[in-house]
Amino acid sequence: MIKFAERMNRLGTESAFEVLARARHLESQGRSIIHLEIGQPDFPTPDNICEAACQAMKQGYTGYGPAAGLMEFRQAIADHITKTRGIEVLPNEVVVTPGAKPIIFFTLMALVNAGDEVIYPNPGFPVYESVINFVGAKAISLPLLEEVDFRFRMDDLIDAISDRTRLLILNSPQNPTGGLLTEEDLAAIAQLAKEHDFYILADEIYSGIIYDGQHTSILQFPGMKERTILLDGHSKTYAMTGWRLGYGVAPQPIVEHITRLMINSNSCTCSFTQIAGIEALTGPQDAVIQMVAEFRRRRDAIVEGLNRIEGIHCLKPAGAFYVFPNVTRLPLSCDELADYLLAEAGVAVLSGTAFGKWGDGYLRLSYANSLENIQEALQRIETAVGRL
Ligand code: PMP
Image (cartoon, rainbow, N blue to C red):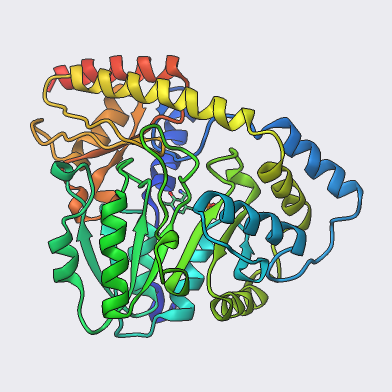
């Protein structure tokens, strides 16, 4: 038997990939499965972006580039953040990574010591808790509650803070609930961060996918640029999940440390995808507008359809492409229900507990699938739930 390093016991996983593998296995046996488990846009990457990548490849952007990213891409990101977050950002405050996910890993590696405390949203993206544990820190969960539109109660945050708090992770718009933090929430959080001297990792990967209201970033509050690591990227907004293109915006000394982590792990992010990334940020945005409009139609359809099913209650999320219906009135636990829907109805969904213990009693459905498939899935879920 292989004896693995002890630290591997503390590293978790993302069950979306496991459910996807199970669903694919059923498909290989001839079953019809509707995929509502995986969080990636079902649209192709817009043509102008693909074209820019092809051109870049032909122009020779095929070798190693700078570890922190190509200067022209860092400049385009700095301009984009300055414009969308309303605070001036410089290219040397930007670090490019293969996908946005490494920013979570690198931020924790760079800033958090064993024994420090890190507060993270629960239910939340499972990688947060996993990596907090991996670096030997203490994961302090901050419950997100349906009764406050899947935001958290400020009192719960105040209770979670201690003199060992090093970092607070925020995610808005949020995975898995689609919830959005308000400007008042962010103002109060900014105050607490300054008072108790902790850093913020602001995961804004869904900032481009909002239906009601607009995106507010913690970065824009006075004094927050010095203590915020903003995470964003091209995966969701530009339907580029497989390209692996993301970035962090942080004070320059943090960028330097993350760059050193890049040198030791990836060397650099793929060069021609970065050129395509510039086209994504500076070229026409019509495809993004169309995608968001289509997501909105699907959101409305899935929320209405789920609420029509006896025993299911679903809030209408303001952003991202997930719904997080409450299924506590049904006779199965949410884990059992997710298994049942895959096996009996051929609909792949995730149990709320895949996102932490505060996700118990919920399912997560991704509506990054066609309206037609969503309608069919709703029909199948209704029939299967009716048989319980
Ligand atoms: N943060 C959240 C909340 C996400 O949902 C995801 C993708 N599922 C990521 C970060 C990572 O994005 P990327 O694919 O660019 O690494």
